[in-house]
Length: 190
Figure 1 (cartoon, rainbow, N blue to C red):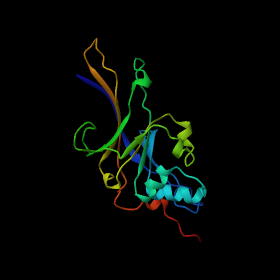
Figure 2 (tube, rainbow, N blue to C red):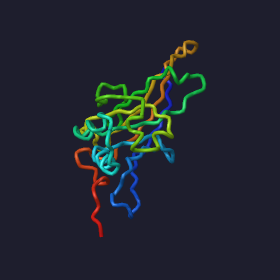
Figure 3 (cartoon, helix red, strand yellow):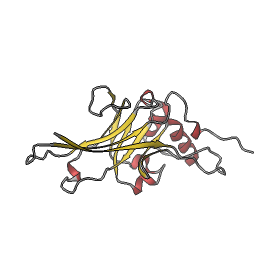
Figure 4 (tube, one colour):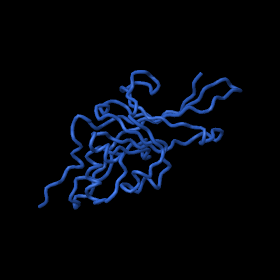
């Protein structure tokens, strides 16, 4: 028997105020209802943020994501049952077909996965305010409308009840990775 806490979330984007010279310097927001559970940084957004900040030094991971056109997904930690120690969890992120399962072999696994957000924190202060579960980069081709981004972790087994437990959060992709993220493109000035 497998028990899991599943949240289906909507993949929603935000736009910046009209007075800015850029259409948006905000990542795509991942939401479960009204609760923000993560963000997606497109390569175009990372390039715009890098240019707007005029940074002298940037983590090689960011410049590599821009040059290789690799979107970066950041997911916040999910609430855990009180009997599950957070230190024992290994969070994973994957992309699956619309009704797929994250442990199914038909999935797109990340190119890399990290848990320390400091290499991105200078771009977005929300990373310092959140408890980050995982940061993962995926091939741009994995971002197909209708696919789902999953954050998941297995809990330690409950030996008394003979069950394996896990938690999952998911967001439907609402950005076509085959097209540039026009939200991060320069807007004409009037």
